[in-house]
Image (cartoon, rainbow over all chains, first blue to last red; front, top):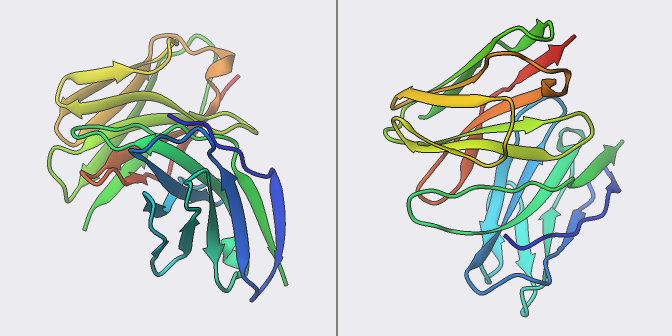
Length: 112
Length: 111
């Protein structure tokens, strides 16, 4: 799996958009970008994933650059409950099974 | 809807004692199942994954083993715990779209 680089921590004011960057310069053509988050002492929660087009769901938006070497997860209106560690993962989708390799992620702190 | 259970939620065990953590999934058939460990201050590490009953693949050599006696049951075991086995253990199941959904986790402290 391609390695990813994320900032160690970020701050965001409540109600503002949180933009979390991820670099994956060694990504190959068939590798997807996945985002998970982990609130303290809980299991990771799936957020969103994409291949090359921008994606949006009820939780967040994923913006992938045209060269696919980086992406940004956007939480449009951050709340205090969005405080968590956010993981960017790049992996191949394999029929039958797949695994995830988590890095250290970005600790997002949303403040009042 | 699918639900994933893990127990116990917390566990304190002495060094050298055995371990058995259980994970069960409801609401899906023939899921891919995973065991992860998260040590303090570190990211998640994949320990084992299983694509079916009796089929276990190990990602890293370690003091632990896994078994899948039933389609929706995944067990993590050890014969003799080490101090370094302390951590937060997470079970997950995966969909055909390769999303993974995690259980609530078991926090293991080995003393």
